[in-house]
Length: 362
Image 1 (cartoon, rainbow, N blue to C red):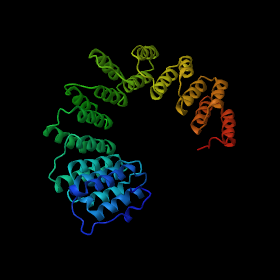
Image 2: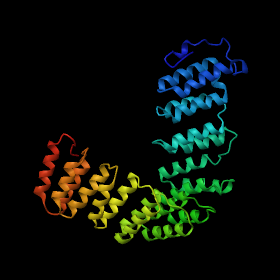
Image 3: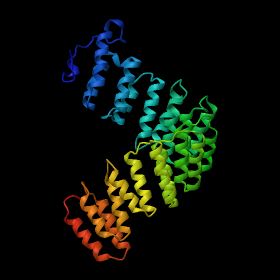
Image 4: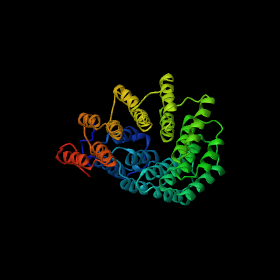
């Protein structure tokens, strides 16, 4: 049996490649199984070369499987994926969507819009409910309100105007572009909202500085008996932090415990930040000690909190205890000294940073 350690070009090659048939189905399945076992682009290219030589590549399913691996695998290459795509005689809608998706995630999300226009011109397909979220994501990354509105218009004209996943994408898009009115209009028109709908709108209000509206929406969510999750609570805590409402922040902490919402690292750090910025480093310390998992954000938050209170010895003790010191932890203490008129102390910490082997000044 062939394995990936066997050069695929050494496999027997048909003299006259034809479309795959029942006679060679077992062999075709073997070759396609190698795609799932590839661990590098080089290996995938070997499979690709073999499929071209034997004609297997010109089977729609087989080509889609190879193309998907070239775009979504851990070793994927968008440049190579586009070359594979261009070799496919008649890409199906799934393949077009995969390419649009890959481009929307790339550093050049505008390419997904170009691919979409190309699909409309070169293929018989119209976008489906899987196409639009990727296009809206691209418009979000581009911060192009007009582009997103065009896609919104297409959604309305299509049969996907009630698709909650697409509408949630539109809420996030409009909020990211700073148009909270449009985001809220989309939100209220969703017939059956899921937790993502509520989270997207709450986060949008927080990002837009409408903290009271974010908290009001959370109360509405409660009234609708929609169970919040950790993402919801991060948004609510962010609003609470900006409003410096410690009492409400403590209530949120109790609410999380009573409703058995998992306190993952992101939520725990949001809670720490709320306590520190609302002026209760004591509450933050109690939470910090209970946290099973901590990262550089957790430690920096505590250092910053004590340093801004002028408790520099405590802040320094936290700095010394950080398992993996990074520049950000040192900067928190240096900044606090500077802001409190202690330039000599700030310079002393900076010199320690320069001598440290664990972090480099930036």
